[in-house]
Length: 412
Image 1 (cartoon, rainbow, N blue to C red):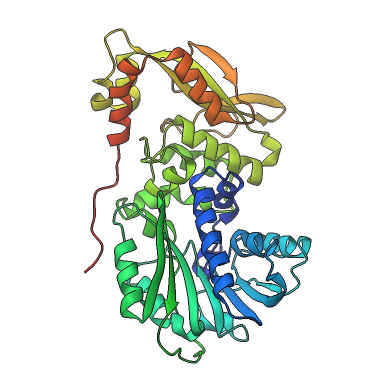
Image 2: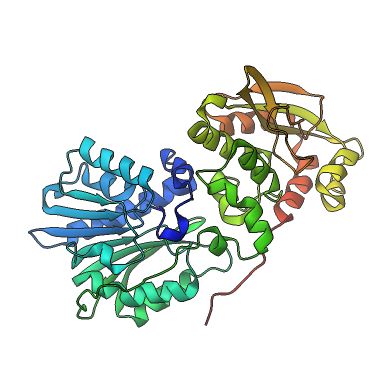
């Protein structure tokens, strides 16, 4: 689910993206629950006998494998999961083996070509999850228009799309209707939408060599950024990036409070605060550079207006009271060359040399609290204990407005 789709994205590290599935209360965790609910419904509606399923850009297969592991019809289901990222494919394969799902086939291949599904179609259930947010609107329409080649009569298609502007969910729902798919369900797991549609027309046979889409990833998610800005952030998802490139890309990510103050919200909107930036960086460092042993920490400190102006600009600084305000800042420490150093990627600064500490954006004063197993809950508790909501709310509102993606409309 939400994996790489075509050869253009072979350098993207989608394992970092999948970390959100481990928390059922995260945005991705809630989305996964809705997808799995629709999948269970599709299996229960299927007549007795064999059921074929396919997953486009399957990632680590959390959706299908998670449902089939305990479903009463697991023995009826054969599935093909198509995923370009080799590491995600290996993880999906291992998960299928661990749950005894011998009829779940994981193919490390290009999900954007119909050739990837030869021998596995016509399918009764098709999952297109984590795809429509990473391709163009024209390719969304092209994919939906060709889905009937993958379908058995009456097949169910389950799909997802983020609801950030431009919100294409209404456009996708209308396109499914125009292409002969009746809507079974649509629900929000903000900031995502999850839909299920049934093929109401006679399917077409599979045609080899049809290109469904180009998986353009965060170029599609971040249309409000310039090409140069997107390039500066590219290392966030490049599996072959260096430690310095990763840190500099994280610093280059625009500062602002996402609509959903989570890692997933940060990635969708390309803006983050010290909380979301350092949580994501700690996850990625643990995966790509485990020797750094990243550890999160929180500092309770006083932010004055001059420091806010220096860090965030005049608009945000204007919300800080004359005497400053108490805030909680998140940063991390890493192990490097036998030493533990502080690393703060909240805002850009002088280029990192790859070995020296990066000074904390909040400054040297304050009291530090090492983070434990639930850093977000711990940060919220510190805020409740130390921060004055009346002085902090205007500051938070200014953060929410900073670098917000522009409103947009789906294509007609």
